Amino acid sequence: MTEHTIPDASSLTGWRKSTYSGNEGGSCVEVLDGYPSGVPVRDSKTPHGPAVVFTAATWSMFITATKVGKFSA
Image (tube, rainbow, N blue to C red):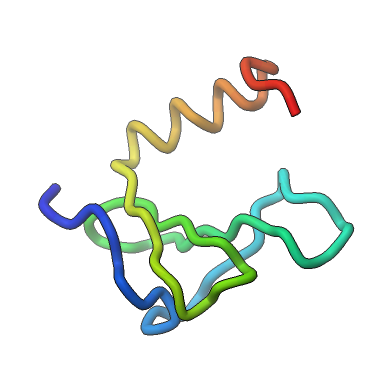
């Protein structure tokens, strides 16, 4: 994968809020499914800011670790 960031994440459509983001509003992580070179992730507070692109395998490992409680809040 050669692309690691997207400078202006608003150039892409179809962002969805992560199911692990709370319902408090404001601070959310958004992901984009179906991106050809990985899984873009952005901060919803800055939609015109950058997105970080993870490989599908790395993103899957992160989600698995989150589900089993490897990270504390």
